[in-house]
Image: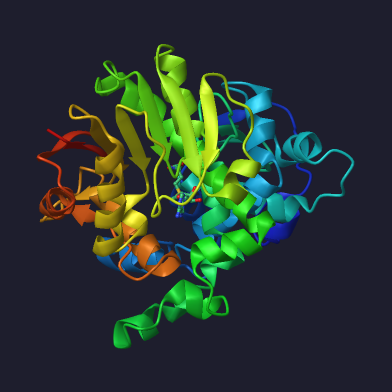
Length: 404
Ligand SMILES: C[S@@+](CC[C@H](N)C(=O)[O-])C[C@H]1O[C@@H](n2cnc3c(N)ncnc32)[C@H](O)[C@@H]1O
């Protein structure tokens, strides 16, 4: 077998295609290695064998997992997912073809790119198709898998790519090292410790480039998840004027008004955020401080990813401000994770716990996901009559705070 002993770097570059192909779709890494292994070790009279301890392997994969988002963010920055989406469904490209389409006119390290594509395939973001010729050389091609489609920027359907880029931004990555300190000293807030004493919102105000990344991440997430919520949640049906408090770039409210054109949408956020908002049909932008006051005139107020940003005291203050401007039959519709008391491994709980950790690392002290009882307490202290968790999509729930 001619590939034995050939450096992997060489395999990653141009691969000649000879004669008849033998299709080996979806070949797992281990299978390939076993095959090569037999040849490699036969000189020692030792047949290669594989021994997997699933628990040990799970542990080492967990420890090494940072390579996954690091690689995916790099592929996104290199426009690889966009290029694969443009190539179309069911199309697979070689690293060379992909490089040419994603980074036209650039000199590309095909070995690096190929290795990144393989890791992305191992977590089913991409699909690897390996084709072997009679001389044993292998050509790898890559296509987008359904998970990978969520990493393609899509203004209409929403996307997770900007969230990936935000989580992988040094501004957020640098906060994790300060978590141990904050466990031992509750006056330490990881984000502020990493960024000269600034909290996330202050930092955003002073760093427009990061603020834009943040708001794009939220916009992609909101578009994606609001489309999903609108398929299962009917609570917007009777609403005439909806105020999205802390609505960022207005992605959520514009998704709601597109589905319910009779709703007049108001997108309310801090002045520097509103200044950067695009014009949106059916949506009026307003700026202010939600802890001071909230625009009146809405029969419902929408809070997505807001309550989890704040401690209980701030949440109660905000909910009281909402209560004040709502009519008697009004409600707050909040979207956040609602934590379960015991872990449900199938129900999106892990993601909810991850967001809870993000709140700890990236936000004010007291920022957290809450369970149903804790959400209810916030609402009742703020004067609401009833608090109901009405539906869940993946790790996110809609909680309604009913005024009367
Ligand atoms: C986590 S983001 C959520 C954005 C949006 N709701 C979404 O889910 O896409 C929190 C938002 O609250 C806004 N915000 C923070 N403090 C605020 C304040 N005092 N008044 C109004 N908005 C505020 C931020 O600017 C940001 O847009």
